[in-house]
Image (tube, rainbow, N blue to C red):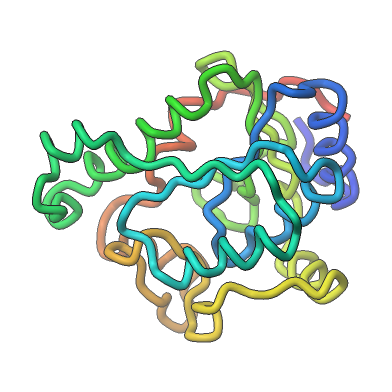
Length: 229
């Protein structure tokens, strides 16, 4: 298992995954959140037509949707797919749109996990923006990991720290998510995202007050290191 990796190694793994190892069979899953522009920019430099899966849950901040549109135009991305929840599942389980108040696990399953599972059909691998510095279950991330479903997960930014992330924004003059200026550091659905309190970690505003740190799209899929650089 790798413990330290040069940040450039993640970019090399990403390029190899898109152009060679999983050519035509890999997609980037992006929330268009506070740090998403980095991977989106990297992917655009490799192949602007790379499929980008965006989960439009129906509960996102308007600022996130505007940021998505701005980044697509800025980076020239042509493969963005806006994936929405199943109307049948919404009608059955969340007809009033208030399920998030009662059962966040089921809400996330309907609005994120299930739609993503369908969107990833046919892909051999997918790319995420997860990082070790985010802590919790992400503290031991590797650059490449196999999932329980047989699909490979590529985490190009796994070993990047906050300074390296910030430097990439500056170097490439990338726009920040508009809510970042208001104190938001990790952004999901508007219904379940708060600004973190001083001294708290970046993701503490997600499902604040609950014993929940992941929506489910990154759980029950990962096993161990698949291939290394």
